[in-house]
Amino acid sequence: MTGAGEAIEGFEAPLHRALAEPILLGGAPRTIAIVNGTLAAAMGLGLQQWIAGLAIWALGHTVAVFAARRDPDFAPVLARHLRQRGYLAC
Image 1: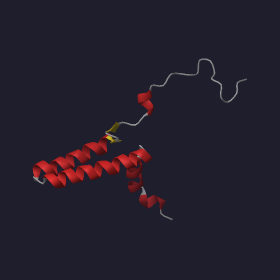
Image 2: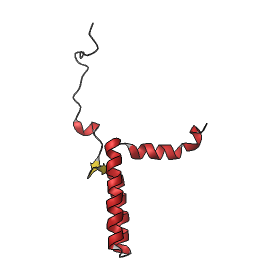
Image 3: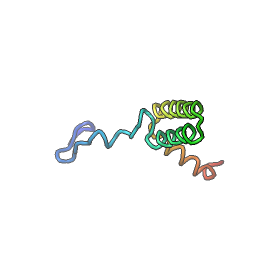
Image 4: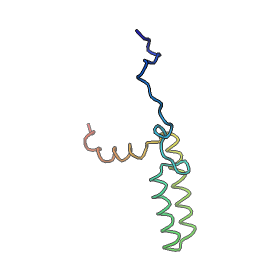
């Protein structure tokens, strides 16, 4: 009989670190960083509003980094919350 902290022979496998950590790009979730950069580039290059594009990028990336520090999976959680909002009303 084994204790709670002991491993059972043959029932353990090494887990690569990349399987357990979230994919971040500059500290923000990858998809949010790409969407934010695309929006800022469209504003800066397409509309030729350079300062507004840089401001959108800096603000959006900063907010995403702070949210990812608190919870790296905040984007899927937020999407699920917005999709299921009506089901959880009291």
